Image (cartoon, rainbow, N blue to C red):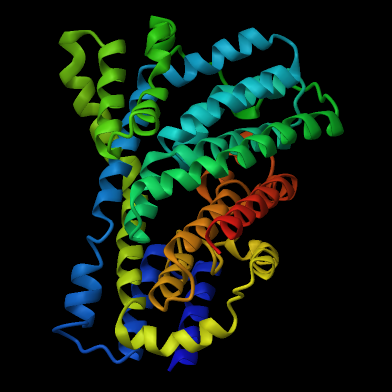
Length: 428
């Protein structure tokens, strides 16, 4: 039975890789098939309908709320011009010094990455940042990669991500926060090295800005007509992080505080109601795809935790899972590419199910699985040519996602190695 479940999982990976099915739909179908193969009844206790679908779908509800709030805050950063102002100030400070401009855009990308992930984060930092970097001579591939590497620096402090790992792996938030803090230096060093090495190795390439920006002149936006956001509003991305990390406030209240701070510091009282509703609805639109994915992940986690699935998979997974710390680091470092292209170790795909199997079978403690998943997520968030932020940044810079993957993969692979070393040293 365990072999059959693994074959079903392989078929699910194939369906996602070939794009025969959207990831969320493939995960739900996979969960239902696994449940039936594991001998789950249609209804009742540990059943397909009542346990996998009914209980699994809202299992990550706290994460979904955090995603909505993060997307809401992201829309406020966009509409009020906070993100654009940060990038403009950095570009003005950097002048015609390419590396300084790139490091500044990297810093802004990291700040934005703590608020919201995926394509919205890339757009907030990249709409102005990518053309600015290209204009001062940063190569196009390096410019796109700088945005992505910057977001990866912010990922360890992305509060919705803390909530996801806390709920999915059934770990307290302080445990997740503690490991993320340890992962951050690796991401930061890799990102700074990327800017220095890639910009100097490729040399300065003076070129006109993006074709999409040159095609036709655009009328100034409302934010441009009004000018830059106030200096104190530029602290908005740091507010949730300070509350959650410095004062250990719960994640959802921290995000709500960021929303309120952004609103109060940028909006006149008579306009607050309209802006609140407009950006909230816009946030829901941005949050819809990840929410659908988290519903599917919750269903898959419920399926792999069924007693029949655990009993069938335990001997197989245990046989191929190294317990020695050195072997653990070596094996899982070599397996890093399996988190690319929606592969089996992608935590926002089948990797969530594998994580559930590793925990439910007792092969690894949940904290070890946290270290693995977060380390792989650093790779996926930057180098995966199928991730939305990578596709957007590459296309906006005028290069292919595969080119970005080739340039960034060595750096984020090193980040994953660092995360796995910390995991083995701390928890094994």
